[in-house]
Image 1 (tube, rainbow, N blue to C red):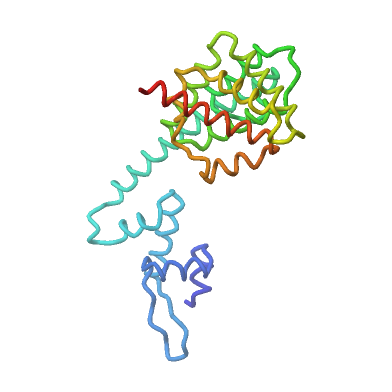
Image 2 (image 1 turned 180 degrees about the vertical axis):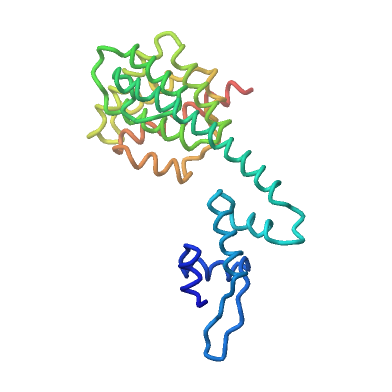
Length: 263
């Protein structure tokens, strides 16, 4: 048989067959004087076995182990590992579907955050803050703050994410903190067209710094990120000049406060 005939007989493509040759899964026959390879029955048997194993979900490295006489791993062992892996995938799928059902229920009830699906912990926190802020006008700065928090919730390593959520929980639990935050958001909104030297910049920075309780400073890692950090530069570039300056001054106030409390 020629390569196309073998591939058609077993139900694979010639490209796949050549890939198996390249990986050493299927021996290549010697070329005949006319330059063509001549495949025999044994090639078809091995190729069919490779196809059956890959259709079960085995990776090509595992197929190689099964096919090799000296691999030390028999088919039963590889299939048991595959079964365990599929069980883990099934569990992961069940968990994802459970979360999706919760998100669909939130969407039907109008509780899904505009930022989209976030972690259940952050979704609960956003819901609590929304309840506390009911009746207040929506602030562009508050919406941007939620976007940044959602970004950190997604991108931060697990330990940092836990500290972030703990810090936000501490903030939400402080008496009057939400009201102060909305007052700070309103000041920052008003700075959108202002000059960075506007006296309201200091007022907004002091009010914004007061929103964060001392118990949350360690959790947020205040002082660990310098003003030249690439993420911070990108973060500040998303704000109007006066707003960015207010945030810089807020960070300086928090660093000073944190340093004073650490003595």
